[in-house]
Length: 371
Image 1 (cartoon, rainbow, N blue to C red):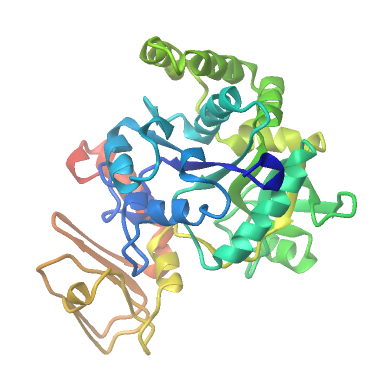
Image 2: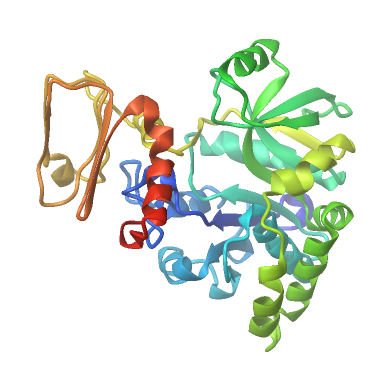
């Protein structure tokens, strides 16, 4: 498969602990290692599987932390161990993506890479593949491409892309500005205008174009990652990584590169309508999975787990049971109930985004065993 025909280097970011899905998602076993969707595959495995029409296994890289590297390799047997890039500590998305870009660029100077989160759900793989191929056309012209999702509601939990006109006669639109998570009224205006797309945090670009833009805007980060990449295939890798990585700025790729690149007219987007969901919290999970006639959702991979739930006169519950224990609920509605061996969470669905604050409090209290 030649690059002209669509050879992509896929980069999957398997970081973060998914604190809004606590107590199911923990630092030691974060959400991307879980199967949450009623299938055998974990979110990470599903992310890699959907790239199979775009990139062979030896062109897929995963960036993950020290604590999860072994589990990631175990779940992704087809990916070469050398393609699992282990970061010594979390430095947010820019450093992770830049490391992958620099390692790939040394292997293939003309590489086009795509960066994907490991915890998104995508219903329509064929449409997803088509959209990535279109984004690759924009990337070949040197644009930093981001995938935009047509909004279905005024969502305050996502960032937005303000779109301009088409670039040339292609379906690629110019991105004029990245907008932070808005208030409900602002989000409503965005959706009504038709000029805004959700920022899905998925990117496609030539590795060299991204690294050049990184050097322009974040020279310290670019220089550090370049040093690490030069040592990557040598015996000095661990030493250089240990010395340089902690000095890299902790910053997201949107803030570090994409906002400034958009202001300079270097960012394009393609509308992606392929059944995208960011499983950020239990409420969203409840919307994605199949509910019973009363709107209750039981999160579990198999029938045996679901047998451990007894619901009477309930509506709109999201229940995550644990093996070997019954969860029973009666006369309640719109709650999240999560049962794990050492922690139980009960919260109204409308406050599902706030679970993160409980994790923050546990950390402050020194209760790290629960985190």
